[in-house]
Length: 420
Image (cartoon, rainbow, N blue to C red; front, side):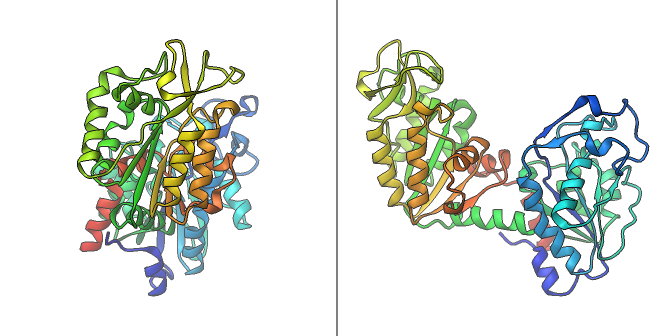
């Protein structure tokens, strides 16, 4: 994928004195102490310390903010006048609410950078920032026309800068004003280091993989990941399914799954995926043993059973130890691993061992691994293997769309601009 990258521009000395607009993904989880919120519509001094708006929310996890720092520091050190913005939550365009404010994000970013980061409201018609300095622009989804990529809005935003930088992979699957439109009309459009790393990891895993290429696709429903399964079935050497998806595939293979979560109406689709893999000499491993319970509860007694012995009143909540060992052996021999989803109800200790075995096999494997999706990241954190996964994707929906084989709008426009 040929795109212009921010580090290329820095190496060429092209950022000094330039106005740089960075679209980051700062959409972090928040808790809101509503008692401290100012009255509705109180916008005076938006985002400035002491107004009350800078305590509108408490950030519970700041990974995305920390991930945004390299691009910002790169641009500032190169002498650029830097603007950074992001969406936060799902605000109504044109209707400010205190909980929609990026003020807590600006405060946390300032702590990471070691200086106060001013937050600018109503910024579309003009922003004042000096070279070597940084301002944060208030929640971009408050601007009317952002979600639908309004051309007039995009042109106004493009006029604010000399160089546009997309460093927000988590929004790369959306063609919005700050992810697509501004890239169309800015003088220069490029990818930041985080987006560049995502592109490189995706290319390494899917476009130029070291074989065998194994994919783990797990989740509650086949229907939500059917297109991913279909796309991967034409590329991978092994397609490991887990969770409710595995139950549907077990049912398609003629096994009884009791009262387990499954989608009987998609059995034909599951069989088609199995057939597509077999036609290429590849496989969808069907569990040979499972961990069952009679109820869906953390304290439900867990019973390991052969896959052929599941009773009508059983719930399958995890893969069994024999299946886990078989899959771990395959993962250890892989050249590339793509991981999306835990293979069991890993939040419940009795049903977490399959996911842990998979996680530890990936960590121990010499394969290049790329992992994405909220539950997958939670599993990685639970088992402390962050340093042993080749690349952890910051995007949820964007990562899934890449696995589906889709061209992401943010990638598309950056490629077009790079091609001239």
